[in-house]
Image: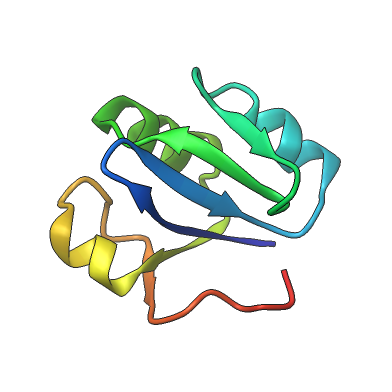
Length: 90
């Protein structure tokens, strides 16, 4: 399983992954997270705490971060991968 992270706006990030009950349970542990049903995507606060918790909760899962976000934000660890685009099939 993999997850993709990209910026929504100044205060939030989108997190997308194929449906998996265990992954849904993990992302629900992030305070302030929200499911955006019309986009079928999760929204989390763009904070150091949320990013750190996301990486901790999904340790061992491939995390792809939008290349622009990766350049702007030094909060992601070296284990994440950069991605120029988010796959449309998710």
